[in-house]
Each structure stands twice: as C-alpha cells, then as structure tokens.
Image (cartoon, rainbow, N blue to C red; front, side, top):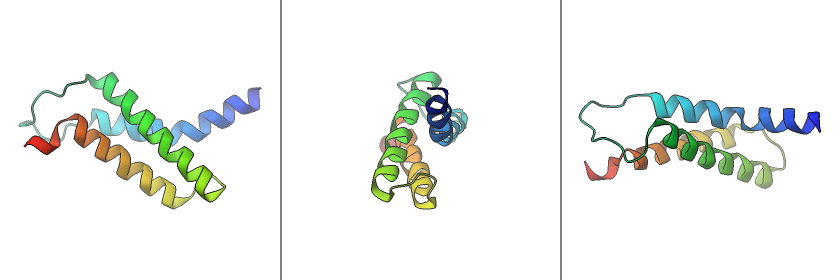
Length: 89
C-alpha cells in the first residue's frame, strides 16, 4: 500500500507543480478578475494535468514520456488561459 501511495505521489507531482506555478503566475495586470480563486484554479489545472498524465500512460504504456509532459504543459496552460477568460480580451 505504501508503494502505491509513493507511486501515485510521484506520478502526479509534475501535474501539481505545473498547476501551482501556472496558477500563481500573474500574466498581465489588465486582465479581469478570474471567476475562480487561486485554489480553484490550482485544483482544476491539477485535474486537467492528471487526466493528461493518465492518457499518456495509457497510450504509451509507460509514464515519464517527454510527449506526455509536453501535452501536460500545453493542456494546463490552455486550461489556465480559459480560467482567466483569455478568450474575451
């Protein structure tokens, strides 16, 4: 059981790190106030990142592929852009 917890923690660590960094980064002062708070954005970005990592694991059969990490960054950044209402500016 302890091994499973460590594996899941290490598996989700990149998604958590990218989610926190992207959510805390202030892009532009002219942006309107986002709908979700910082913790809400971190949680949503973490869920998006987790799904991308899981999809990469299922499609390639192993975790830690560079293509999966590129997809993680792309999808989390797109999610953050949508959350801060980047389409309406």
